Length: 271
Image (tube, rainbow, N blue to C red):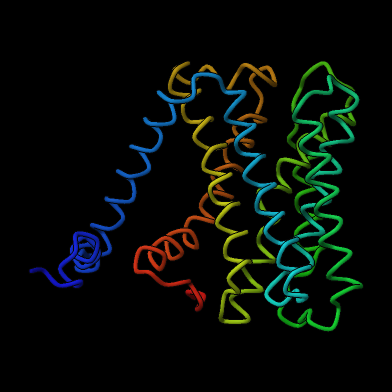
């Protein structure tokens, strides 16, 4: 009879562990392509992709709220990431309400209110368990460059000029809002379980968004870049920001999935 160590799962894990870094990268790219193909043939309407992405983000926030009120601690959480998240959600709501309010607006409002609950809990209810020295990235280092980029590169559409800048600002801010949380975990040299769930949920959410972009670009043979913004740099900047956020989270998600497959919870943050 086979032993537990000879199970198919352990055999696959052992085989993967023996691959070189180059082979792992190739396998990762192939897995990403397969996931894109599956996304293309299972989700025909881009509407559902965005709903799924925002829904997964909201689930991640609910996980944080559960942690805060059940365990009564905010250890492992970056207050600055939550504040930046609230900032881009509030910004997106400010211009979306000026345009056509839809289900996206409702989801953003729910996510914003939930994020504000998290911020309140960290700042007041559970302040004693917040480790401020680990939350070392200054807000200005994130907000100021994003604001400058939004003023320089934004959509050239029919909306009010301020709305165009707000639109760009919210998208760029969303791409980098997770940086303080990742830096926090690197400073702490560990990942709290529920925080890991939250960051992984963000990674899945960004994959759906990036997948949508790649599929649309492929299907339109690149013309998708010129459907909004009348051919300026706006869509290129938007696509690049999606890629930036996806790559920021990719490393964490890789180690998270690796530890999950091995039957562990990721405790140590890879440096």
